[in-house]
Length: 74
Length: 229
Image (cartoon, rainbow over all chains, first blue to last red; front, side, top):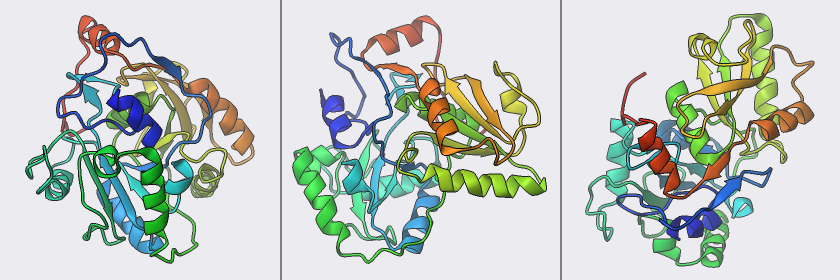
């Protein structure tokens, strides 16, 4: 549920569980249609350099690209 | 949310993958409930352009700080007004390795664009063309990008074609491998329409339930965090 809420917050931004768990009963499958996505920098140094160059504030949201050791899921 | 985020530089470091970035993340978790200054799966912060000063209290997620989507969007818009942004072209956000790029692209269900470096004169022109296209309204945020020194990691993938510069990859659901959906080597064929079409066919269906983990365990798929490629 938290994941779903955060998907609304920021497309594909993961949840805040310290150990990512997902709804056992959920069978939510989505195809990522051409819906608007946030453009994410993935490297801190590159992002800061870009923020200073453009004088834009920084939205930082870290996430682990795995769930219970399995990759491909925030 | 996406519109509100456009006035910001949005950065999503992959937790546990880079020791130097871990220090940054730990710093913003000091004093956070459930954080304690130690590295956790997620960190959330809104910072000034130097990356050194928080604009609001930090947390584990936008939800923790703002509570709901509307408040978050309003907060982003209000805070962004404090900064007079320079209107120059943005840089292409890059993922540091093919291995991590495939994983992150799979997490998001969107394509990974692999750019193979070359000293060929036409490469630079093609790269600059790609950067420009990537920032159009139609393509912004629709793919992830990685620059590779050579094509070795791509040669094992289905659909690989030699002597191209830009490869659009469709990942498997776990992001451990991919297939080449399209490749480009000149600006004649690399267009917004071409990329929109290719990106559409390179998205993957995401099962966001526990079944993803079950299937991964069954297939023996695992991820080693912090592995240097």
